[in-house]
Structures are given as structure tokens and as C-alpha cells.
Length: 249
Image (cartoon, rainbow, N blue to C red; front, side):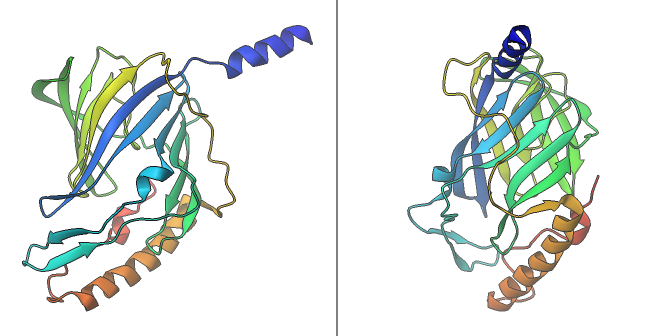
């Protein structure tokens, strides 16, 4: 029993790596959101954390749409003080997310780690201290362009990105205009660690299939609302994710 207890304690105390990213979203060439998000990894599991305190904006952001319309982007205020996370178990391929529907309802979604089909490109560049290679892939209608380094031979990256022979140090979701850039890499880390486990909250839990059906309905409502309030209904300034992009692959 003593040996068993010691073994369990050692397993729970796996050293963590911590990779901090600057995540930036732009809309019509204007930065509408920028925050630091962390990726923690212990060799078999990882969690990508969007901290609750970073989700509360102090002021509205004004941008101009493609048709010249002035738009005000409201600050996001989840209000419950709990982080949003993407948990991945790289041994069994399971992924659990704390995420949000288009109607603002927060929920837990059971999904699977995507098996991304990467195309290694010829491009190379230096990102910070790392010599990086370019790669591209498409996932749920979004095209990703990334730069990864084999100097850190860990096959993970920000968000839901993984599967390359090295850490992803820069990534761009071209559809959502979101860019991730590595700020610091600590492996193992001596800084703050994080519980690498599925999110434990009272939010409703859905399978990805159920979440997909709900999001199609809510995204359609939001799209119609946006089109109805736009000055040019034929060219609404924001579009929601099409149903076909919410596939289960």
C-alpha cells in the first residue's frame, strides 16, 4: 500500500511545461481583442487556458466595417469568474472544452482531438530565438498558417492545433483573423502551474454532436439579427460560422 501511494503521488506530480501566447483578434484591420493565454503540458495531457479576468474589457471598441459603417464591439463579460479551457488527453485522443454558444450560453463540450492533415511548406523564418518551418492545414472551414520549431520537440500548439514534429510558435486562423504568437517557453516551468484536467464546473455538458445542432440554430438567429440591424442588409459586417463548418471530423 505504501508503494502504491508513493507511485500515485509521483504520477500526480508530473513536471509541467508552460507556453504563453499573445492572442490577437482583428476586425477590419483594427485590433478588437488581445490577451495572453497559456498552454500547459505534462507529457500526456495539456490544457489551453483563457483566463476569466482577461475576458472583461474595460471599454467598447469602435471599428469601421468594409462598407464604411461604424460598429461598436461590446466588451465580453462572462461574469462567473471561471476560466475557459481546452483540455486534451493525448493518450486516448479525448478533448473537453469549456466554451460558449452564439447566444452566450456557457457549456462543456466533449469532443475529440482533431487529426489535422498538415502540409509542410518551403518557407522558413526565425521567430524569436527559434528557427521555424511553415505549415498549413484546414480545420472546420478555417485555414491555419503556422510556424513550428523542432528545437522544442513537443507536438502541440495553441487552441486545438497539434500534430507537427515540434512546438507551434506562431499560428494564424485566417478565417477568424486570430493570431497566436509565443511569448515565453518554460519546460519544465518554475512559474505558476495549472490543473491539467477536464473543466470542473456546473455548466451543462453536451456531446459535440449535440453542441453542433444547438450552435447551428443559435448562429442562424445571430446572423439574421446582425443582417437586420446592418445598414446594408446585403453586406452584413459580421458573418457567423456556416453549419457545414461545424463538422465532426
